[in-house]
Length: 299
Image 1 (cartoon, one colour):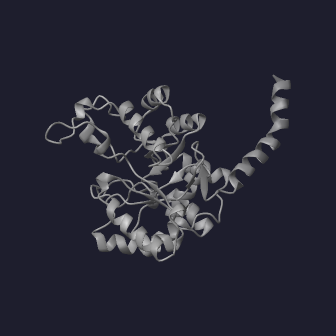
Image 2: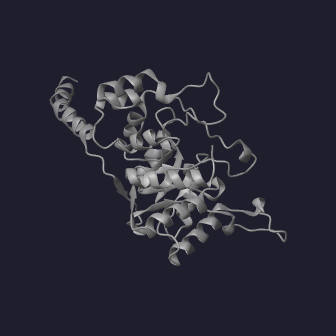
Image 3: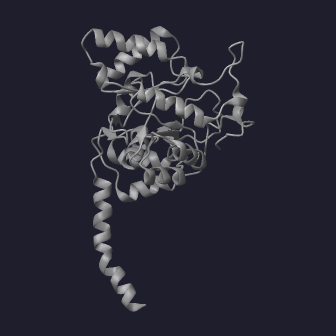
């Protein structure tokens, strides 16, 4: 026992050095997917964010001007058309090139079976079949990378086992209060990049109760923010980036829009990362209760 203990003590300085290097590691502004394409590590979330078309035609250009090159949307968000219009205007004006922009979307009902009235036949949908339809989209050059959202390990494994093209990305609710550690670690082992929606705990969600916990008001997050002269939101986002994730904050506020992407010029220490890790409460706020009757409900 003494010999073993001695060996452990001798290795502690090396271990500390390695941990320090990990904490001080520079975070890249993009991460390479297994498809070979680069995904920006900060993206603009657009779920329930915009009031109308005019609002979006203002916010999207503002985000591009601040440096955003990753925009997250979905058919059910109702934002795709307006985002396209805003980007088209900026591309036409020469401010950006299309190849600079990474757009993440979720499969619409165009890829699933419908009855004679055009209504989706949810009972007949197998997500493996939907994945095969997405693979065809890649083969036809319609999309460059494909991934999953709100899938658990068992479901991802089922997709991987039958896939010609492996998932490159998994988008899930993930933040310091909901760390999804087992799932995120598993994805890292499989080479699947994790994107975090609700990276700030979704403090502006319309169903939030006054007594609900608020991540960006947590005393630990606020304390660390004061040390670095950053906002609590910036600390919460940096925490995710240093873990190797992609974060998708959303805001239509010009000041917060700028702050949320200004997270590449400071480092959280090993101790600070551990403090933030300790905040986990498995506090999921997007439970998708409407889908609980589905045999594929992931939570």
